[in-house]
Length: 142
Image 1 (cartoon, rainbow, N blue to C red):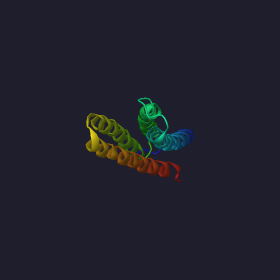
Image 2 (cartoon, rainbow, N blue to C red; image 1 turned 90 degrees about the vertical axis):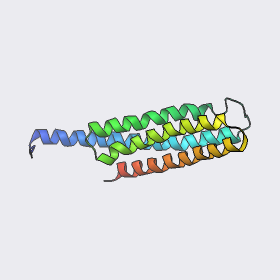
Image 3 (cartoon, one colour; image 1 turned 180 degrees about the vertical axis):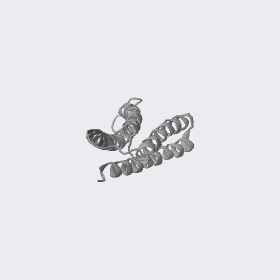
Image 4 (cartoon, rainbow, N blue to C red; image 1 turned 30 degrees about the horizontal axis):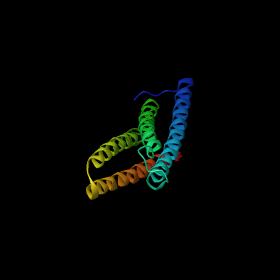
């Protein structure tokens, strides 16, 4: 094992702390975005205007939500953070991708079948929120 001492050790520690703070900030941002996603889904479903554009904010934010976990993974890897802090955001990216597939399948189905598949979309959103909460909690832990 190589032991790093002196100025180099201080620089490595400062880089780690900086990346850890960046990771925590991105985790907070992701949490806010996921909560906003639930708001936009509800406003699209229960809002006064039920046209093809009522879900546009929900759709657009979904792509942003996909990109933040990818950035979280990069920050965690570059900062040499713990393994879970690297792969948990990838779980969210995978779940968001699955959300798109579920939504497209549900749109292709009529009536009750489509509604039931969209129910899986809602459960996927809850799973994303749960993993996001886990990431946030780990990122803010001392």
